[in-house]
Length: 233
Image (cartoon, rainbow, N blue to C red; front, side):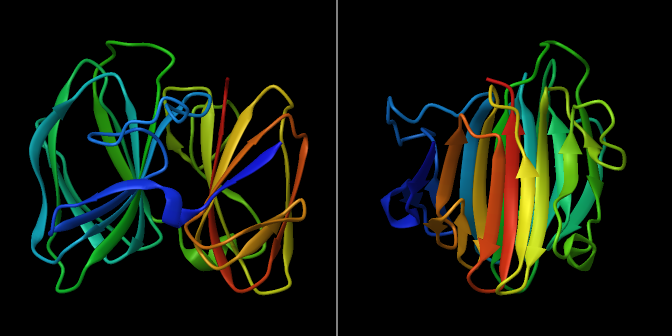
């Protein structure tokens, strides 16, 4: 089953400095049919105006992945961590027993991110944060694991959950394959470009909710940048 979730039909909010679209229920958007997908709980498509951002606020017991699509995001937290994550790169914050953080766009232009939350396997562990570059060119014509809690996923940022976040870039006409356990859930969003997943068209920033599939064939209808989450039920 592959269900297309068109971008224009997503929930969302316009706060002026922040324009957000929500693939799942979040903040003021509530849809009882879209409370998550497997362990995936949140997928927000955020555009953050220059010199604005999220002031310090707390989180606990959630794996929070930030995929930067354009611009850069500057992070600071109560553990003393500071960092700047640029387009194409990823940061992971394991909120654990509790952490306070801020995320600002200190750039001269808007920053666009995917913010992805995944439910952890265990609660109450010490919080942590990390960031890592993942050059887009290194993902050409293949899926690369960006963040993972699955044994054997070498080189990925660590997650505390039975899930992985992957990225790929395709030129128009190229095809990439992904094998999925039938019991698991997948959610794919093209950051850029249109693709077909097993023959079903998914446009830029649409969501594709996938389950009961064991093999994905993703064909680029135009140059595309993909983000995929593979999680336990």
